[in-house]
Image 1 (spheres, rainbow, N blue to C red):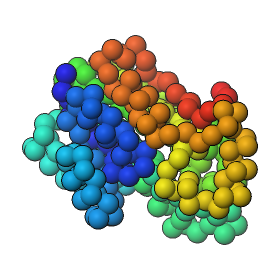
Image 2 (image 1 turned 180 degrees about the vertical axis):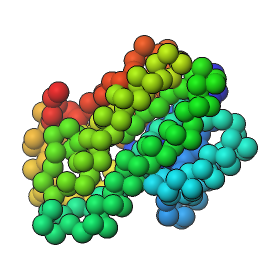
Image 3 (image 1 turned 180 degrees about the horizontal axis):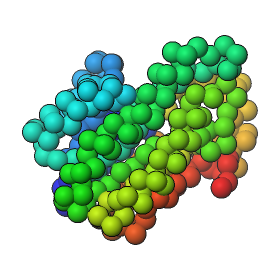
Length: 240
């Protein structure tokens, strides 16, 4: 059944793979992005997926975007909170701005978009929320107190909101990827990247499509008994 799906940060990396996979599964996908117009245009031309620029960490911007999506495509039934940024450094060097912007983009965005779509899902008696967390929200990571806090917060948010949605046909789940072969990871110096791969039992980076397949499963009508879960996909690097 075709449903409207919003994927935040959905034009690049893991988000782009999720957007493509949801479209292939029959959903009407809108992929949001924060600022890279050239990449978004290229993605839209390549895939035929609608793109929309807004700041997922800004409640007012989300309010306008959700209304626009509803008008153009219909109410959002599948929400993938994938928008994420890093501002890495040690706590001693981290500024308040570096903390605030990461929390806003990675965690507050979940509140913003769930707040604006949850009542519509309740009325429809169907909804799928999938929050893209991270291995670093589970295990922590040196130099990422902001990012790790936001990604860990997403897991707690998922468990709490799942309890609110369960009786209304709404599932809320998280996916926690490990190190995935994306543009961001490929930018890591080769020597450092080899050290990361050496810690992954399967001996390689993950592929964005492997994360996307998990999201498609969680978004499906058949996944209605899966809620409040965190699906860890990291090649065995961190086992929970």
